[in-house]
Length: 205
View 1 (cartoon, helix red, strand yellow):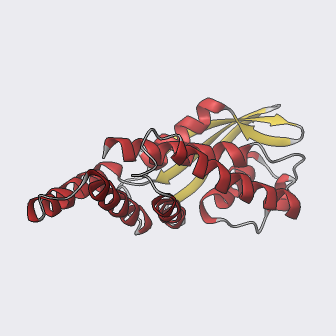
View 2 (tube, helix red, strand yellow; view 1 turned 90 degrees about the horizontal axis):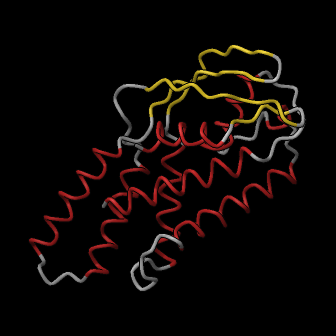
View 3 (tube, helix red, strand yellow; view 1 turned 180 degrees about the vertical axis):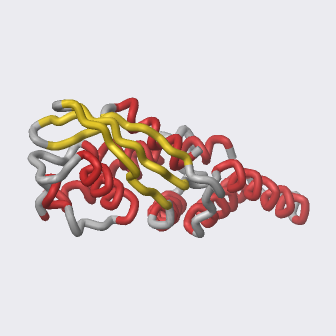
C-alpha cells in the first residue's frame, strides 16, 4: 500500500511539472494564472488557457506529455511488469484523473513584488491516510477469505481499491492553505520545483 501511495504522488508530480512548463506570455494576474493552471491540471478545463499563453497545439502537446509521463512514472515504479500490467496502469491512471476532478481548491490571495508573487491556495486534497487504511482493511478481508491469493492478485486488488477510492473523491475534511511562489518567466507566472512539491503534498498526502 505504501508503494502504491508513493506511485500516486509521483504521477501527480509528473502531471504538475508537465503543465507548469507550458505557459509563455500571459494576460493573467498571478491569482488568475494559478487558478487557470489548477483548472487545466485537475479539471482538464482549458476555457481560459489563452490567458496564460497556451494555444490549442500547446494543449494537445501537454495532454500527450501528460499521458506519456504518467505511464512512464508507473513503469518506473519498481514493480514487475507481470504485476503492474498495462491494463492495471491504464485503469489506475484513469482513476487518478477522475479523482483529480473532485479535488476542491480556491486561490484566496496574492502579494506581488515586480516579477515574484506569493499566492495562497486553499486545497482539499485526497485523504490518502483514509484511502490506504481502507484499502489495507479490504485487502486483509479478501486474503482471509481466499488465502491462496497470489502476489499478483493482491496487487491487482490493491491498485483497484486505491484507484477506486481516489476516483470516488475521498478528500480530507478540512482544506489546507499552501503558499506558492510564482515567478514571471517569458511573460508567464510559473511556480518553482519546491512549490510543485508543496502542491503535491496538499493534494496527495
